[in-house]
Each structure stands twice: as structure tokens, then as C-alpha cells.
Length: 280
Length: 268
Image (cartoon, rainbow over all chains, first blue to last red; front, side, top):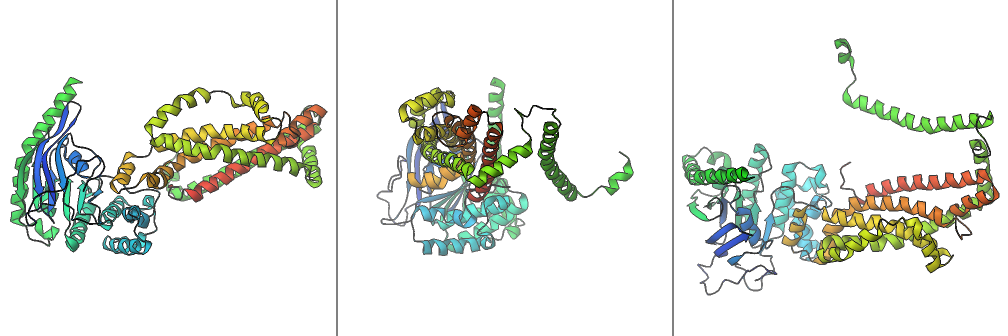
């Protein structure tokens, strides 16, 4: 499976059982003289809810954009495993901040991917109807985004990605602009929808809490240049109840563990920033 | 202000309403007031009625010309040319402007030509238009078209370039082809700015049609005004001016309504 200029290659010679949904090898991305991502290799299993945390500027968004086909890698390879003959798109992204089209209604926005894939109107209506229902947007189907709150707009973005039925879902800090209550609600809703068919998810966040609450595994990245620092498996049972989980001792331990790993990097990122400021 | 009065102050909403009503009344009162002063000044001989005839006498002529059908003929001629000019100038400008916004190469190719020709006062092209298109309809339509073309093209380009980059990313991520990029993102995204371009362009078109009809035309409001100067029929001149102002006003109202209709997502 290849998309335009992005170096996606079919996963070759891997036994079916061990075949990862996403295989990344020696991925490097530089902008001019600046290395954003440095030689990252990892496998993400089918159905895995994979979280990436790292200090700002560690290249996590760049990594996701390469996966989304919006950026090309400087070197290295990315392979998204797509079964032969599959009609599904290999990925759909939920963007950070407002990304739904202001000129389309909620329904039109949610069905955008399906419309681009030229599916029959009846199918689009059914699929969109289902996900609007799951995201509690049915009543607002004919509203325009400016009539909705920030939380509802982000629900539309999530409905749009799920309705497109991709092999993998990419999420770039989808809840970072929301207030705490809305964030909690949307996290729960996301887990509910995800439980339906357990797609492979790559989710970027700067919130350690969020990483533990949602993920199966957390990748901690280093400050610039972004390298793989550590994997932390999250062995918490599913389906999860976010409210209960936050009181559980394992939860606290995991947050502490990731935070300890991340703290040095955040510190280092801050020093890097200070240096840049000083040079100005 | 004393402390006591703040307690009695009307709620914000109500105050806003009453202010709006007051503004409405004032905006109607001021032109009527001006016409009254003018009328009185004309009747008392304070101003020279050879140049500034009383509004009532202009109105009388306007009604007379409406009844004879003469005014309708000229107004229709101007409107027809204006409509063709908007279409012939606006449509290619819209496409070119959006394509320039989407495609860097085409932008680099066309931008210098636009930058070089845009500052030419459009009225100064009239002799050239007469030379090329002759004295008939096409030279007038061409003048309107050229006036509409630039603001629409420039605004369409700006509109596309100002579309938040995230929407283009969404289009690419959701596999929109070129055609869909144009119809579902570039065009609607740029539409509010494009509408402003059309408003500007139609305003310029109105100026140009009046000028174009003054030379070598047999009909139109510009012709009406010019022939009034030649025969020293000052009232007729004012009738022509009034009609052009009226067209401008009506077009503005219509365009604002149209905008509300085709851009329903614009937060009011």
C-alpha cells in the first residue's frame, strides 16, 4: 500500500500472527539542519491503543503527520499493514484544535471521508447516523460548527475519523484545547466507541494521565531530537472506567513511572528553549 | 453619574435594542432632512436652481419619465450591460483567482501581470475598448468586466491563501482529489472573501458603466446624464444620478442578502 510520495511499503515476509499493524524502521526527519525525529523504530500491534508522550518539540506531531501521509520522512520506512484488496483507507486523523469545516453541517463533516471515497449516499447516511448517535450529536446533525461548543466540535472530528473506518486512527492531542470536564467526557466516549471494533490507534498527548487512562502501551520520547526513550506497558483491564481508574493504586504507579521518565526530558526541552531564547 | 441611577439602568439587552431603534430613525431622518433643506433653499432662491433644481421638480420629471417608459429603457440598458459584465469578468476571475491560490507555479506566473495591470485606472482603458470593440454593446460590457475582474481575482487568491492550513491537511488526509479540494475546501473556504471581491467589483463596474455610456452610446443612464449636459436639461441629469445611486443601493442590499444565503455558516 503506498500513498503518493510517502514511503509506505508493504510489510513483507512477516508471519501473520506477528505482523504488526504499523512497522516503523529507522525513521528520521530533519527540517534543514534540525533533526526532529532521530532513528525511531517500533512496531504497533493490531488493535493496540498506542500512546506517545514527549516534551513539546520532540517531533511527536511530525511522526504522526508522516504516518498520516502529510509529511515525508527524510529517511527510514513506515509500513501500514493493509490486507490485500481492502477498500478501507489506511488512516484517518483527528487533528489538534478546530479541524472540522465551518462551511459544512455536522452531518456533512462527519461524512466527509466517506464522500471522498465516493460511497453510496445510503451507506454514508447509515454510517454517519451511527457515529453521530455514538457521539451524542444526532440532535445537532444539521447545525453548523459555529453553533457548537468546542467539545462538540471535537466530537464531530472524532465521528468523522471513525465513520471513515480506517485501518488505523491517528489522534494528535485531540482534547488538549478542551476544559477538564469536557476532556474527561470525551475520553470516556472515545473509549466506548473504540471498544466497538478496537481499531489500532496512535494517540499523541502531553498529558501523562491521559496516556495511562487510554493506552495499552506508552512510548516516552526524548526532547529534541526526538528519540525513543522508553516503552511503558499499561496492563489495566478493559473496558475501563476512567473515574474508578483514577483512584486505583496501579494508576498512580504508572503515572509516576511515566512522569519520572518524562521529567528529565521536559527539563531538557526547557533548557533547549532557553538557549534558543538567549541566542536571540 | 450618581450611584442611584445605576440601579435604574435598563438591562443591557434592552439598551442595545433602543439604541438600534434610535440609529435606524437617525439614518432615515438625515437624508430626508437634507432633502428638505435643499427643497427650501431652492424655493427661496438661496441656491441657483439652474445647477441645483429642487428635489420636488426632479421627482416630478422622474415620474414623468417613468410613465413614458424612457427611464425604464435606459435603466434596463445599463443593468443588462452590468449583468453581462459581472458574469464575463467575474466567472474567469473566480476560477483564475482560486487556481492562483491553490497553485504556486501559476501564482508566480500570473502575479506580476496582475500587479502591473491592476493599478491602471480602468477608465483610461475606455478609448482602447472603443478601438477594439467599437461603439456597440461589447465595449461597455468589456469595461464592466475589467472592473469586476481584478477585485474578484485578487480576493479569490487572498481568500484561498488565507484558508487555515489545517483544512487542506484534512482534505489530503481524507483523500480529497483535486476536484474535491476545489469544491469542498478552496471555494467554500474562500467564499466570504470572494463575496467582498464581488461587492467591490460591482461598485467599480457601476462607475465604469456610467463613464462608458457617456461616449458613443445611444442608451443607458450614463447616456441619459451626458445628453442632459448637452441639452442643459439639469433635472434630467439628476434623475440619471438618482437612478445610478438607487441601483448601487439596491445591489448592496441584494448582495448582503445573497451573502447570508450562500454563506450560512458565517457567524452573524
